[in-house]
Image 1: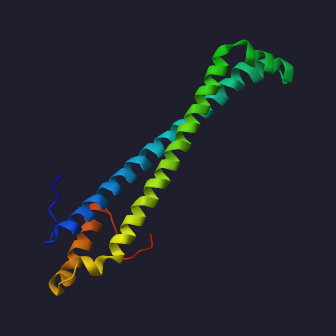
Image 2 (image 1 turned 45 degrees about the horizontal axis):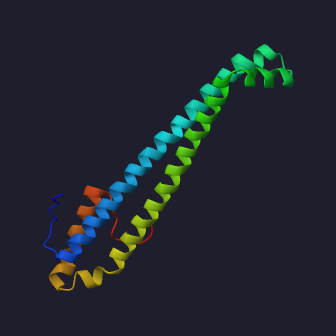
Image 3 (image 1 turned 120 degrees about the vertical axis):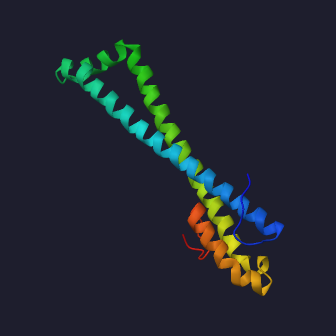
Length: 149
């Protein structure tokens, strides 16, 4: 991955920024996967609930024992129930991974902000760092001005 920064920076700063960009991309990808899984889980749940209403609840005319027997008579219902739960589990799995990636990204971003005085030691570098910060914000949506989100 070749990234040309708008100002000359040392190798340590370059590696920190590249790692920060990589973490941001990882977080964005996990966030996208988590949203897709959530919407798939909702869609599958609504479809299965609609199917259960049409195939089990309406024909049983409100008797619980008939509903249970209709549900358990067909193994397809149990497989679909397992599928619905696995989609929901996948959504919660990606949500946890997304939250972890977000925490790691923000920790690294805050570390970069805190160490900016050490990374930009010369007066020219310190005065030109706002160009780098603006470039990171515009190109990669990474805010290096403030620590809070």
